[in-house]
Length: 436
Image 1 (cartoon, helix red, strand yellow):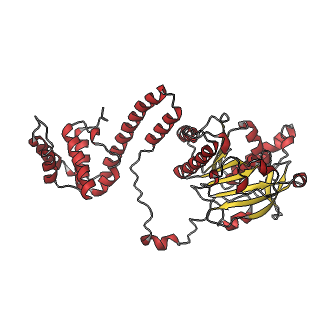
Image 2 (image 1 turned 180 degrees about the horizontal axis):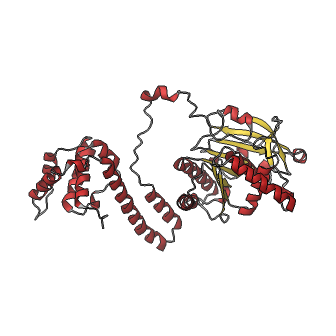
Image 3 (image 1 turned 60 degrees about the horizontal axis):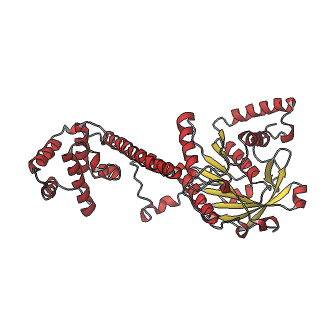
């Protein structure tokens, strides 16, 4: 059943489709012939589509009539289509001057039609126990949009590419200043970054520090935890942000100081927001995160600038994949797709293989299970630490991949295990927010 909208609205869409090329271009991928209630409208629109696809221009009425004449079935009469075209052409043209109104109408009923079909398909998928397929089908329906982006015109855009107005400077600083020097200030939206380390070395702690840095840029952060509880992750943020000893946060006097410092933090970085969400280990997919993002936007008016996924191996791919190395590569690809789709920065963490425990410097050769998972990342660093370094609160960050910046260099770092704060060793002053 087609989406119900008045015949005059349908005629307005038909009139604009055959006379306004911009309107047709923006709606051609949305509107389908069977959306129209009146069979003559449906056939007229399909004829417009067929002609335009073949000749790359809109058809004249005479062609529409002749094309339809050649396809008439028994009992059909061409006069019906000629009369309808005449009626369309006699529309009050002032009603079609506002093309934006008709564009919105066309987009609206296309979304509803697509969602109706997604629901029908989902019933079949549910019977087949294909929950991931349901999530993907509904996601595609939600992406229906008339936005047209034909890409970057290389020859026409040469001056714009090098206009140094600061727009291409990274807006998400890394917690290590040396890295920011090579990144023109930090990372950008639509990128995927990864921290690599063996179990227990500090992957999650690094993500908390990196997310805290983002909050200090007055940005919004979504932290997805697939291993630790929301409360435990929140406590780590408390210590990193307030610089109060983690093991003393339960004490009443320290709790009082925490409240005062968090109040000052919130007033200083008033636009920042942090949402921490825990999903069961090995159960969530990138589509699960998409569903959460839709809920947060609708119910909480929350759209993150950065998403932290802690960590990659604990996600499932959207589609079932038997080989673990292929599954991890697919998850990495899906996370980067999420970054582009949501126009945000995505940070994640990943494990090394067993060799990562014994080597002095972790490179991509020590990636656990899948080398492919680093291919789609824009920037990746490994955390390296010997027993001696652990004892004196230091480690080394090795930049093992940078898509468009310096790579394969070491940054000496320190970690205060009392406050859980990470910083660059060469940076004598405390990085980040001073809560004193």
